Length: 383
Image (cartoon, rainbow, N blue to C red):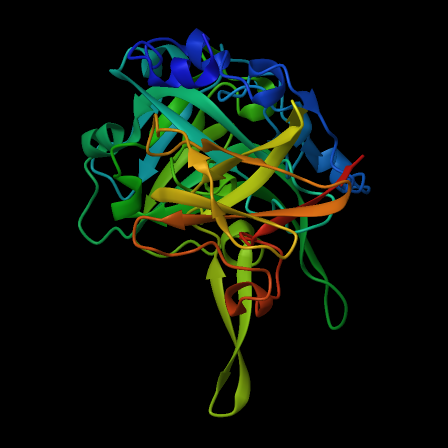
């Protein structure tokens, strides 16, 4: 079947195998792949030890990312966990604390979701452009587990702790220096945690979670940046005070500069939900024409437009959505003269909001590299 026929087929969503066979232009149409002339810089040290398995856009050939291709981020390394001794504690401001083994979680009603996961630092640096993937996740409902624990009145947040730990510095230099061992953790409000799509995930694409991606259990919070989807879970704590750990209050905080009463003013917000975004993925030639394929993701994607060089924005064909949380392929065919060209894409949501340009104040006033959803421009040399 051709790719569009596959997507139109009523049986396309019936099996993961069909999803995995969904290919981009070079394999679906026999086109010749033309490499982008701009290349991401290599990962510098020590980031190359933290970030692994980046997606190379020109190699993208599936809608579902295979388990061995999904990127990994290990802030405190990549822990090795024995599933036989692993336990998950649900505690804090609850009437009925609980402890789960892996078998215990698997005994609970199973739910599945197809969801794209992206690191909030993706495209924030010239060497990071492949921290994204799309997978079919399965696990137990977080909301049902929290309901069974009976959250007490006055609770405000749920904190998710991984088992990964590392040394950090709370204060360096005079008059004192404080170092400590910290555990990776992130929090969200009670309301956000009770979203029915959230799960304690133990399976990816029909197999156990890879060690790199959170084995044996991780949080999957569809629609949130990867940092919120805590890996290697060991404890869930319901709190009646706000959690201010490193990865909520100091790291993964977006700083934007504004003005108040004529003076500079900085706003600070923790990284949260994924933003509207798209990216050109590949360009192929066939019969003298050029097909550009890409991806769009984020909330309520409704359209994608593409601009070649300084030309007009042209609407691309956008594949149907198979999940409210997954990325979508888009495609456009253009005639390109020999020489150097730029390809820029922008996604538009159902309300008409447009993915911002790089000089938009939403991007230009941002002082940190998190939540970088500006329009992406790629360069290509046509012979």
